[in-house]
Amino acid sequence: MSDLRMPPPPVIEPDPSAARAPGLTGQCSGCQRMTHRYGAGGRPLCQWCMAPVAERYGSSVRYVSTR
Ligand SMILES: [Zn+2]
Image 1 (cartoon, rainbow, N blue to C red):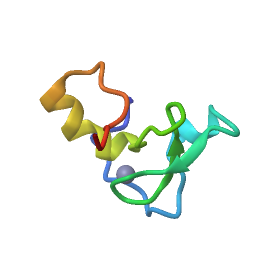
Image 2: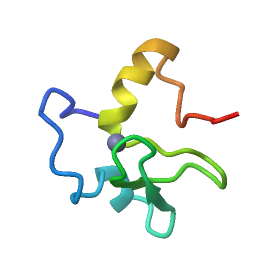
Image 3: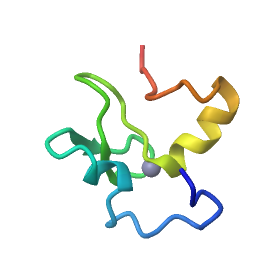
Image 4: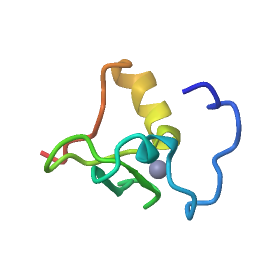
C-alpha cells in the first residue's frame, strides 16, 4: 500500500496483492482488475478501489459485502 499516490495502472495489470495470493484471485468489483479475493463470496477490491472505501470505513475493511 505504498504507491497509492501513483495513478492506477491499466486494469489489465493485476493488483500487486494478486501476485501474493496465487489461486486466490478474482476480479475487482470496482474495475474488474485481477486482485486478491479475500475468502469465498467476498467482493474483492484492488488497492486503488479499496482506498476510498478504507477511508470511509477504516483500514480494517478487506472487502465489500453486497448484503
Ligand atoms: Zn479496482
